[in-house]
Length: 449
Image 1 (cartoon, helix red, strand yellow):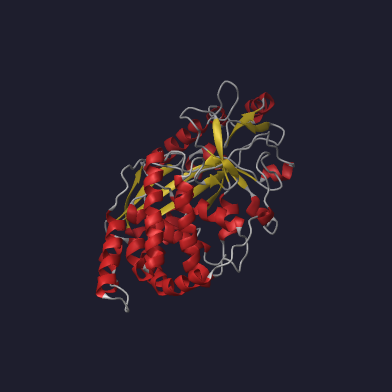
Image 2: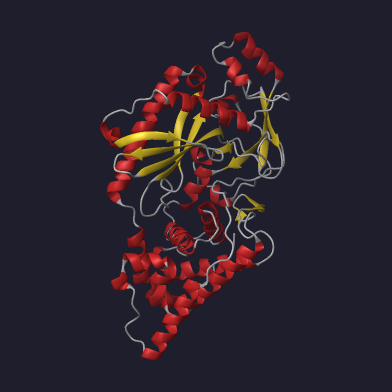
């Protein structure tokens, strides 16, 4: 837990000047209510119907399916403009007793899920031949659950099901077709609407562990003390460090969601950083930006510090620290639960330096000319959205106005040289000792897919 840093007079003045600017930015980023309501209704109706029918047509899916858990930026309250991308966890119950599997450390951020010979023997002896052979194909010769095989099974079942699937009426009458794909740990599909719009859906198969089970090597934090047990569950997701690896990655989405919920200006600042990332095409994932702000939060874990009225000066302060973190050697954006894991690991040093240098110039302009905040944050988006509002402040001489305009144009035109893919949206952490589950009851609510 860090020390609270007081705000000086200059920061308070800057905060007051930024307030109307940030209000305009957030207004431009607000979710389209009509599109959001329509898309959410279509998504839920469609997924519920698909899962019901898949249970009827596939014996293994019927056995394992537990629930759908809606995650991602929309359900975390971090989505901007329109809700057209959704992350859904498919949570299933594996038919293993608590003493029939072990979860042990792999490389940092990953674990191995191993099934005992006794479990395999029991299933072969007592299980239904309709699903036992399919389930046991998920294991390698060492009886380790292989992420790729789980994803492959889901893709096969889902794609085969869609060949004869008929979209239901009601909210889904706006759907033209469903187009399947595959991306990372998820089964991806696109809901193509009759109006030409598209909803992207990632279905991620997961193994869930329920509190008080906890991965060794991951330290429990003081800020978790007031969370309910249901918020302290954690997951394994099928995103191994190498394509054919047997390792699963750790993930704590519910804990993170609870951490930032109703905590002053934390979410607005995350949305501002994401908007800047989109404006300047910075190679930083949404998850890494969210994590950077969460780390700032736990270092100054005080509701008054993060009061909504402090948003302007905290935004500039957090942005400044992000720029400094990127240009320094070592991990730029450490994972919240494991500081040795860098969520910006795949971003090259050249790109980090370019982004960090750009941020440094933007912060300087924000402090000098806060009335240019909208253009500095949204760049060309602001010109398209609100050209009439994109003007200089009300009390500036022509000379100063020209300097400000030139400075801002300099910031906006200095593009980052290198851009590469940085797919770490759901980065998870390492633990360094065997994981166990404390009771049979705990395991009964723990699940996999």
